[in-house]
Image 1 (cartoon, protein in one colour):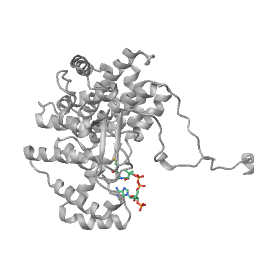
Image 2 (image 1 turned 90 degrees about the horizontal axis):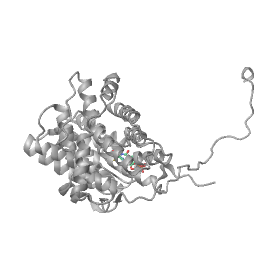
Image 3 (image 1 turned 90 degrees about the vertical axis):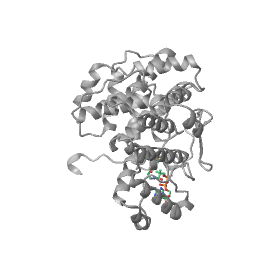
Image 4 (image 1 turned 180 degrees about the vertical axis):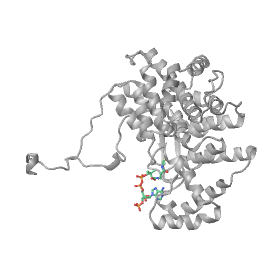
Length: 376
Ligand code: COA
């Protein structure tokens, strides 16, 4: 009988060249490029290409990709009917999952092994994600959908569609960097889900909608919403110490801390913390930031030896709320970014694909007797 490894911790599920993490050193790289360099010098759209196709794009390649990402924001008109039919008080992640599955129904293609069909689907999916998130938010708020603008980058267009206001340059750049930071992260739960579905040769819309479902959980993408709720519950920085004592004594998890792979501070948390500070300089400091910094100190003091440090979700909520993104859109924003990684893994899975069919350790009974219903 094979040994069961809960959560498949440490078990390789695929060979991948998309991203790399060294959890002891706090290193994350996409296709060999350290995340710090990409956050400083690249854009989300360029990073998406890098993840998908393996190298930094040449000028002509990038211009074509960027143009398609812009024009393919025009989703089928009936997609807006789909969004209007969804309950406005439902979670936007559920809406996004339903929208992605629906969008796939408008695709006439079946052979996604054909390179140009695959490329077309990739830009349609990447372009549609932010459009569907923003449209759901506008429609549930009783507002008109703001038409997309093809000339804007992904982040700037999203802020434009969300608010109908010309996006602030710093706000757009900060969101763009946040998208870069969330674009891929090796074999996490949603990427694994994407690869399992990809291995059945399902279409990429189904692959992405399945991954969106996997990202909803509070132990994965859903944690960023909980972090902000947690900071609001704690309140002032002075209340942090007693609150942390209570959580540790009760052995309760503190949201935004801990990671299966990182045993030091997540490098993305450092970059997001820097972005939060940049935003405060321009838009004013938020009191929750002081609470967050004190919380980091107090948690690391008590649990740092166990490798518990802030993860990517810890500062992302503070950044997003400063950008006036509603709390329940935090995870959809994560999904908008991670779609680049999911699709890169979909492409990779398609090469030498073998359908996932793991084993199990059977823990049930054998030779059970069938007793007729009235005799049980
Ligand atoms: N707060 C307090 N203690 C934590 C903790 C946290 N956020 N994360 C882990 N620990 C402790 C556990 O209680 C456990 O302690 P024990 O050995 O005394 O029982 C130990 O650290 C190992 O935790 P475990 O949950 O087994 O680690 P994991 O690798 O399976 O889980 C996470 C990783 C991310 C699921 C986990 O750290 C977590 O739930 N974090 C909070 C949610 C979150 O921020 N998720 C976003 C991830 S990017």
